[in-house]
Image: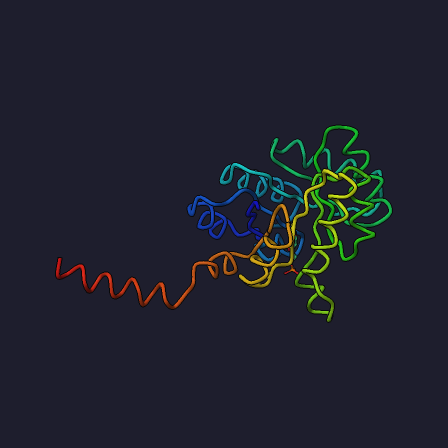
Length: 216
Ligand code: E4P
């Protein structure tokens, strides 16, 4: 399973990248706004800075919701760097745009996916990645991990090549469950990635080894 970090924060991206386990970055308009990035030039500059930090796929989301403008916007985003993946919302015009991008050699990430039906459409349109929002599904009383399992089964039976990019990750257990369910990628906040490191027996064991090392 590939690890992406889900943030627009350059310091966090750098910290995760320095672990040596980072395969890419996802952003969305909320995450970009949180970093105070405003205006077309600043947005493009920020994506460029992320691409220079991480050698992997970087999702950059279109802000338009109509086919023609999505295509124009996506072309501009894709021109920023070869690693840019154009993130497109799961709406009717989004599906048309994903198909256009796929036919024209531009890679896409279909975002805001909450059902198996939406995942089938994204794959049929030729999305490179599809992003089911695990945490938001759990938040509304459904089971996000069950959706990953269902998508894995459907994609395998049908031979769809679209990669399942588990998104809206809230904790380390989500990451483990996504790996178990067969997600191709997990995009996580830095805290959830670092959460994987934690075990009290590791801390106790290391303290004992360091103590005993003094007697060596
Ligand atoms: C995915 O690419 C989205 O940016 C993200 O995972 C959404 O997460 P949230 O539900 O924590 O906002």
